[in-house]
Length: 82
Image 1 (cartoon, rainbow, N blue to C red):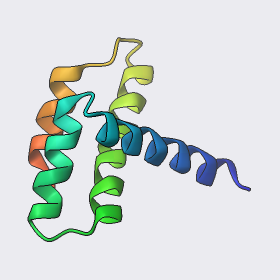
Image 2: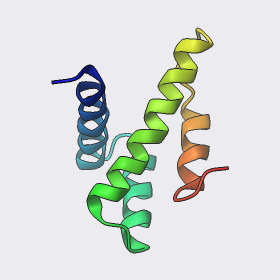
Image 3: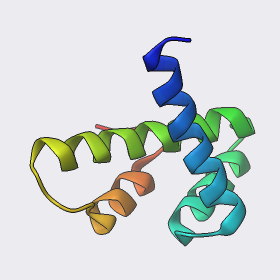
Image 4: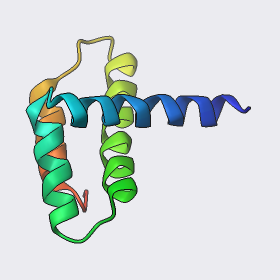
């Protein structure tokens, strides 16, 4: 198994857990909005996971804490991001 697939699967599992638990609520709301707009459950989950991965990457690059407000703002821009 490649490390890229392992990382991707980890982010997908994290998002699925967040959707199921409703924590943070922005993830579940985004998932509901995206699936309500016609995206499949896997498509919506993958889009959210990409935003999560990008925020984590920025967090590490900038040596800062996770920015929940920024994450929420990016989720609001789905299904398109600038």
